[in-house]
Length: 239
Ligand SMILES: [Zn+2]
Image (cartoon, rainbow, N blue to C red; front, side, top):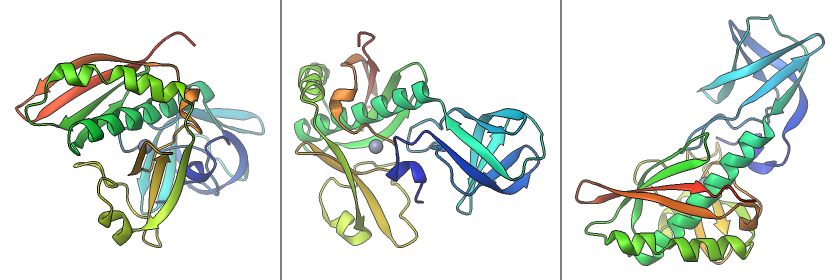
């Protein structure tokens, strides 16, 4: 599914029209919100209209429609302003980009190890699960230095759309065992590239360059069965 925020991650507020209404939820002609998915939490934010405001309490995606769940039951129609919570989006973009950087080094260092799960949290931490049979956890911990070197180098992050068969043919482009982003209506897959470091299919929101993130700390590494390693990481509080 193609979202406005994929192409315009910096546009956090816009004026738009209510195109459909159900009790407690609305669909918009254009929405700046990320509705969640692929381990990234849905945006927080508000809708404002002449004389009122409602907080977005969640999203439902059905049949290509993004429903914005509201914390009040007003009968909305006409023009509204939709505004994303900028601090929350920024945290998600930092965690999401950090997850790709971590993933890049795990993929390179552990012979193409795949991701089996990822979940970001509102407190600026995240966990990623990797399928790495017999991994030495000290080798995983040692990736913190290279990860932060890559962040400091302020590497540009780009995206392109490629055909599904091309995506499936390139080793490592579909990185996750569990979550593959759904293709766009014309059968394309969105590829997020940290230039020279990593290319993978992803439908989340990312930074424009790695240096927009504070350093990452690898907080904890747990063994989840013989194959899986769960890496918890967080955004360092400085900067
Ligand atoms: Zn991503």
